[in-house]
Image 1 (spheres, rainbow, N blue to C red):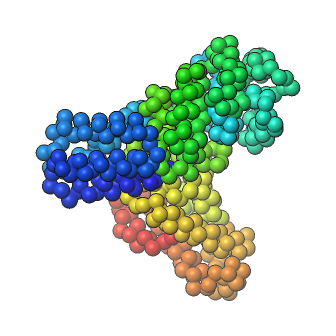
Image 2 (cartoon, rainbow, N blue to C red):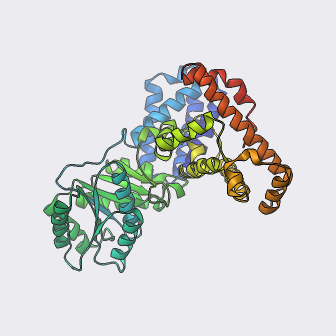
Image 3 (cartoon, rainbow, N blue to C red):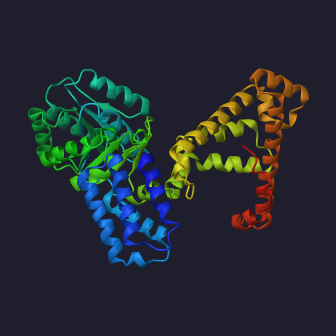
Length: 457
């Protein structure tokens, strides 16, 4: 997401690093390049003009042209304007109403039904009790699709054989009151914004039930057309927010940068993958830092907290302290790492790692290929060998090498590195104890040992 724009903006800013100061001439050059980068990223022309004008005004207003560090000054200005463009601050979902109603809107094929299921997963994880309501009575198999998704995520779907959407919603509200559901996600029928009859149906739902949220689901791959869609829906329904899907597949990002400015409505959620847990809150500041190659350490930490549960982490720590960390444990850790998302996404969140999309993809490909090799290698062991690495001897290594198709030389390297890692883990635990559990002091003391482990893959 935003990879094309991100690479170009980073290149433009890097060019100013060699300048002693920002002058009218090189500032114009930078603005021209930024304008071109935004247009190539499929950003709406109105947005581009406003963005460039604001950067120019900020630069002149803050006396940046006589600054001593042009690159950093330009980064700050572009960063601040990107945050403004993306909506200034995060906009949380509105949970008012008993029950709370969230109406999902969108064109056919925008990913609305899948986004409804993803939202249900997210809300359940946050402690709410959601009910999916099948309100699409027009598309063949729409109700079946929602029921299938509901079964996959373990969330109930309310549906009935009726051609009256208002009746379905009212009955779902009555049902939720009896069953204890506090949030109803209304999966309405996908439509064209010019379909007067179907838009009238949405207007009736809005006027009768007054949903707390009217979320328009937009496929970010549609580019500038997303602006027309959003403006039409907003003009008729006064939407409360946007859900952008397929951001992981959109390297340009023009839709995200355009819809907020043109509709003055916030992006509330983004879909960043095909998995049903791949729906995230949208943070303008975090996105701006990622576009400029500054990473997103907050999102990285939050994702780690979601993936690594406290109980498993404590069990692992005990095993590490006793040097009992096994190949099975290694596989568990690797499996949890996969839940982070693609390695490509993770690399984009690391601060200071300014590498192009192509280079990230190469690193990601090599890393994932290495993970697969390790899985094959460990799965070629017996259950006893996986649990007790100390059993490894030359004959076992040869058998494993033959079974996995990995050269014996590589098998020896991995086992040696695995043993070094186990020793390092135990050493860190011992040092931590000696400092009375102070992890910071222990890390400083272990710095030299960590250097010796840089080769471990």
